[in-house]
Length: 302
Image 1 (cartoon, rainbow, N blue to C red):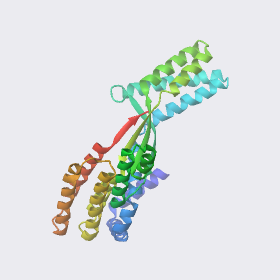
Image 2 (tube, rainbow, N blue to C red):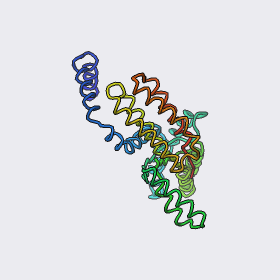
Image 3 (cartoon, helix red, strand yellow):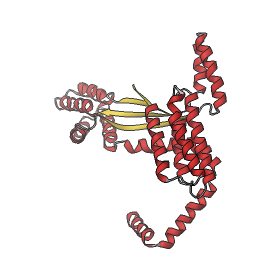
Image 4 (cartoon, helix red, strand yellow):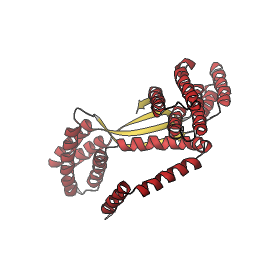
């Protein structure tokens, strides 16, 4: 029924110009209500949410389900439900075989879970500069405890923790657990299932939030520069400030590294003022910031 209702509504949107006009009107009203200040204020949460949605889309649901099933079978065996566990393990082995073949030569580790958090520290550039100097002094004086405390205040980042299932290693452990269970070696089967559950790896990825915010604000500005150039200019100015903040916070080492981006933003600001800005130029700036964000992002594996 829901699918049918969705199809009917989709058809209505396509064939009804009146409905389309109403939707455009709503979008325009919404954009007017969203001031540059409100967009800037919400940019941190929105950039984190955007990353969260992107990362959730990468999760391979079948791999996550397979890992959960392995845990369930381990529970059955440790509670002496041998026959039920044997039947379930056979079905799991077949699923793992199929999944391993599907991703063979494509992916060695399959993402099965993700947690995305926002860490917010000092956002004022002048305050961040002063704090950075205090950190340098603390390190120079070998006061590493104070330096660590101060460095926490200089964090402004999106932290992604992704859980991966190495499908080849998991398959080997499941195959061996099944073999032992068929041979009646329950303890060995339990040990191998525990090995399977421990094959997971966790990657921690840190994205400098000021750069992610700058990217988002450029997107916001690209939607408004024609109808509301003043609002677009405020958003571009804040995007520029965020990139400078990223440098002060230590995510970027040299001023020279951010100069090309700053110049690109300033050029676009002049074009918006002269009403010569285009969607393509906003897209070009957005892509430049995204590349910069990618090069500034760091990942470590546990």
